[in-house]
Image (cartoon, one colour):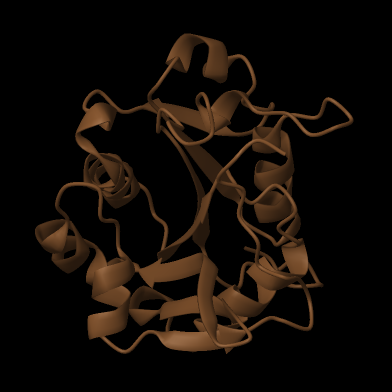
Length: 196
């Protein structure tokens, strides 16, 4: 991540979680598009890049061949072999990939928040910028937990150890007192679980 002068400030790897089958939605959300035809993947990846992430990784699973075609230029894709086991498998694959990078932290957002503003991402990153490898913060909207979340490198092995089934990092964030970053002034925090 770079500051206004282009100087490297915080090295954050943006992550889009888009591996699920989207059972309630009626199909993989990685393939979803807005009313204007723009893939949700493009919109969430753009928010992470616009927030200053130097790199963005898209985790794919269900219908990964078709979904990979929608990953925008400049973003990387990671096909998660065991995505059907649940969110934990996707998070494990993402964090294993992140360990091999020089990122200080990961900024994680699911694909089903296509209206996510870059301003929300920037605020969450700023909350963890004092000590990026130790960062642990997530957006809240009117006190309700939302997305994205930032998780510093010092937490990755512990997060990986507690992952199971269809649970992601949320339990770890709660148990370890992740900083709640209020963002209701910037967005409503709504994710999309059903076709609109």
